[in-house]
Image 1: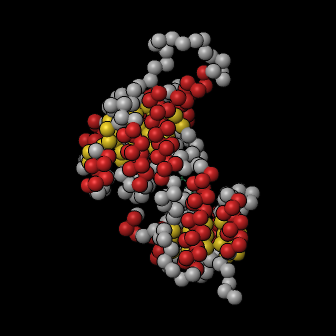
Image 2 (image 1 turned 180 degrees about the vertical axis):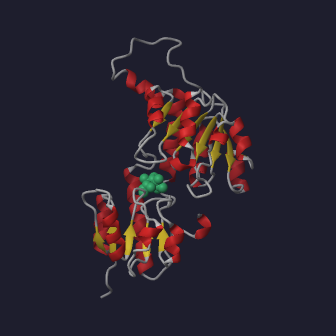
Image 3 (image 1 turned 90 degrees about the horizontal axis):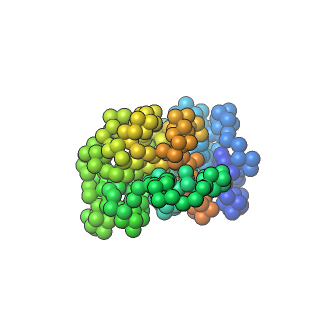
Length: 330
Ligand code: 8YV
């Protein structure tokens, strides 16, 4: 009988996914859900045939240098692979896969929720009654901003950017985007989307900016202090991609100075640590902070697990796994 691959999973996954993994593989699960220590990660890469990490595991080149000869596949439980030094893995003959597609709609929903939360003061308003502070309706109290008729600038028009654009159109926003290249003409037409070759020029004209590109060396601090300063003082920015794409300190400074009106952030540069200046701004109601929730649905997590299983299974059956991460994607 063919030996079952030893699969080390770094975090607790939904029950049905873990059960299926046990049926198919020699699965080493993390039932306590305690992130692996540096030593435990080294032990995992030394012994495993497959490592299943998540965004909370840093799979860098020094760690991969200690990998045993059996490690042939890193099947990431997640879409973004910025937690993995993919080049280092590929150069050691290790295949890397991710879980694209199944998080798209959930992430776009949460991005829209953040846009509404910031513009219409949802988070701030939701605290008033539980805290016993409501004295009654007043015509000028707690006003937000209308989003219908405003301009949304999407930075990164991949699957999630496009799913956001579809939702935003239903809310009456006009769609603008900056991307490495144009999306297909048919999609551009359907979304009535305006392509901006220059990110700088787009930023200067948008009412709402949404970050939806992957974090790669090329997008680190893409929203730099200089670029953030180009935004209109009444504009807001939301980020459900990766914290590292925005210079968080510069963003906090510009919101404090009323040079940007607000922000809705689901991701942070140094998760789970969050810049105290942003926390203070959240208390003041200028920003809405969510703890990396954008893809958190029961359905999404099971779909992600299914993808991980299919990637491992096809790989060990001698086929090309469907979600290989290729150097051209980085
Ligand atoms: C996941 C994400 O929760 O998939 C991604 O890239 O950012 C998240 O939605 C996380 O990555 C799981 O590893």
